[in-house]
Length: 437
Image (cartoon, rainbow, N blue to C red; front, side, top):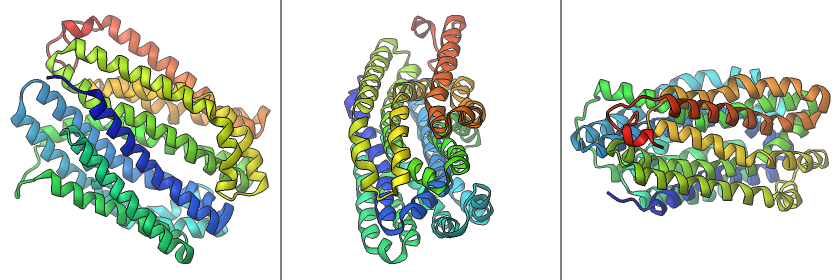
C-alpha cells in the first residue's frame, strides 16, 4: 500500500492550526474586552482546558497507533474492534474528566496564583468549560480517528466548521458576557465537531469494550497525551514564575507570546500527527523503505517550518502587542521574550518528532521519556534558577534551554536504542529490515 504524505500531513496541519486559532481568536476578543486581566485569566486557566483536549487527542492517537499497526499486519477485524474500543474510551474519559474537574477547578486556580479580578474571570471560564468536558474530549479524539481512517478532508472540514461556530459565538457573546461568552463558544464549537464526527464514524449499536485493546490503547496514549499537554504544564510553571517576577503584565505578555509560539507548536504537531498513521502502518507491514521516505520528508518539512517561524519573529514583535491591546509594560516584555523564544523552534520541532516516531512504533518508554522530562525536570529547574541572574529574560530563556536539553537526551537515547535493539518479529518493535534504519 502506497501513501501520499500530503494527503495525511496537510489536512492534519490545517486542522491543528484551526484548533490553535480557537485560542488566538479568544485572546483577541478577551484582550479588547478585558485587557491584561482577561488575558492573564485565560492564560492561567488554560492548563485545565488543555488537559481536557489533550485527553481526547491522546486517546485518539493511541487508538490510531493500534489500529494502523493492525491494519498494516492485515488484521482488519482486530483493527475495527480497537477502533470501536477507542470511541468508548473517549466517552468514558469525557464523563470522568467532567466529574473530576468541575469540583477541582476553583482550588486549582487559586493554587496557580489567580486572585482578584483575574480569579473571577478564570472561574467564569472554567465553570462552563469543565461542564462541557465530554464534548471536547470526544470531539478531539474523533478528529484523530477520522484521520486514521483516511478521512483527512472530513476531519479538517469538521474542525473548520467548529471554528466558524466559535468565531460567530465569540462575536455575539464576549462583549456582554466576557469570559462566560468565550467559554460557551468553546463548548458549543466542540459539541458540533463531536456530533459531525459521530455521523461519519458509523458505529453499530450495542458495541462492547475489548479490555485487552483498551489497555493497549491507554498505554499508547500516554505519550501523545503528554506531547499535547506538556506545553500547558510549561505554561503553568511559566505563569507562576512570571507572576512572581513581573506581575500581571508579565503573565499578560507571556499569554500574547503563547498565541504565536503555541500556534507554531500546533503546526509541528500537525506534521507529526499526520505522518503517524503512515509510520505505524509501515511498521506493522514491515515496509522499511516507505517508512524511511515518510521520516525523511517530515523531518525536512519540520526543519523548514522552524526556520521560517524564527525568521518572521521581527514581524510578530511589531504587531502582536498592539493586536491584543496589552499595556506598555507587557509590550516591553514581549519584545525581548519573542527574540529568545525564536531560538527554541527547531529544537521544539525535533522533540515533537522524536516523541511521535517512538509512539508510532509503540516504544512507550522512549516516547514517555522524551515527553515528560521537560515538565517534570528541566522546565521547573530552569525557571527557578535562571531568573536569579537574568530577571525576566531568565523566564524566557528557560524554554530554549529546556528544549535543547530534552532534544539532546532524546536523540542520545534514540541512537542507543536503535544500535542495541535485537532482531524481532513484527513491525511494532522493528524487524530485521527496520533494524537497518
